[in-house]
Length: 316
Image (cartoon, rainbow, N blue to C red; front, side, top):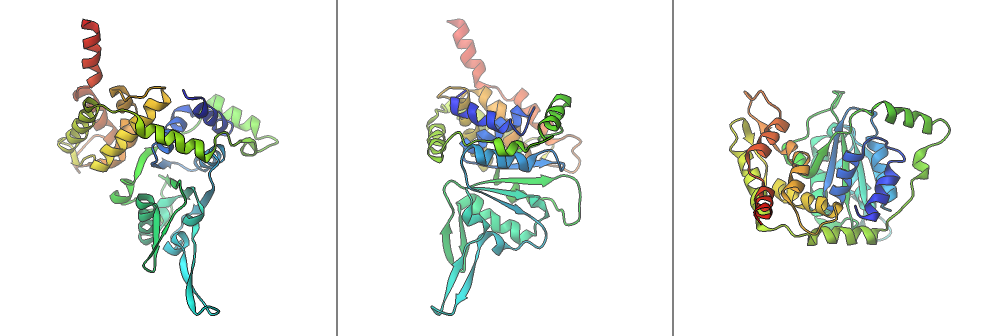
């Protein structure tokens, strides 16, 4: 693994123990320039993880606690009349000050507020009173969604779910991880010890390296066959979108970089397939399986191009 990435992971593990795999995948999404949805029960460390990551990679962060009364203008900003100049002046919102926006309980926001976030996530800009304002570069969203029903909670619309590159669940810590957490928080806050170990320039350079990773036609064909197979599956109402295919390609490239390669393998695609694609599948009402079961079935039935490469090497 790249030394810089290992350092970032080590810093995050100062506050989140025993969750190496999901933390690695969040870092992959950052390298692939995609947004992350953490879908889990309250209290498992979603917010703490996001804050630790922002500190480790030197990003300016903003936290917004979404509730039904949060307005779109709280995010995008608004125009206010200035009597001195006789004109309206733009007052920035939370999005304008963040490289990393942590949106807590995004599924508690109103539909209008959720819609205001769509342009920012897709275009990296906001529009207020007909004027477009670019957001800081980089701009990245980690949103949390609590699966436990509370007042004001609603499911995110499919169009917004599709904007997130990956959806992850941290889950509860095991015995050792929870004991470590309790011991380390007896007299200190581990977040205060998280250091910035890479600069924004280094992060931008790593993201540029991801874009230069080679995905040969056999890999692009594999991604296409997997996504198209999801759309024709008997239990699926809506399959993986073209945006999902693009995100799968980018995440697989980030995985290759983390593994120290300059090319993508079918195994890289498989490693990130469920996290990129499970939230993009809508099942038919009569389906008695989960989206994850469908994806496992696709990985079994759609041929991996690595098998051809391995067969060729063995014949030699």
